[in-house]
Length: 234
Image (cartoon, rainbow, N blue to C red; front, top):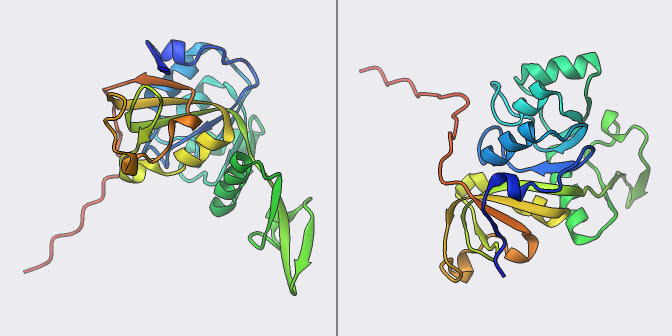
């Protein structure tokens, strides 16, 4: 069964106001650029964004902030995203910042059907406010709830028609976990290959977790901050 869609618009069919969307990527690395841009133009509003961060330098998910289509963000990092800083300070967007390890584990739990788990991370800080805290073997742990979403938008290096995926190095980041925790996973792939072309040992995410695939061969692949090592003095 082929899951390949003919266009990005077709891949996003059914997206409505109020949807919760997980987006893979770390900074601008591994972003599903075409899907992100298409959501900004599609018209859905009051979205809940679940992502490590919300873009930067006016690129990636920062476009959603500029278009004012996001009502809530669950993320691990605000950083130098000036748009998010401003909207967070003004109360225009409800922002929940989660420790990065907890963020991943909440999604993993959601994908595994586990409703919650206890972690020592955040005990005694604002992270634990309003949450249950229990003691196990003399140490306190905070209860964290699983995290799921209506959609996951992820980018893979290679995909076959069934949705088996291979990612490119660190661009894999959160994407496989998000795919397990979303009701509908939409994949934007650099290369669309024949069924069986990806060796089973090289499949990073089985197609069972993927519902839609769209081939997008061209990407901007922005480098946020180019750093150069100083040349040693002679």
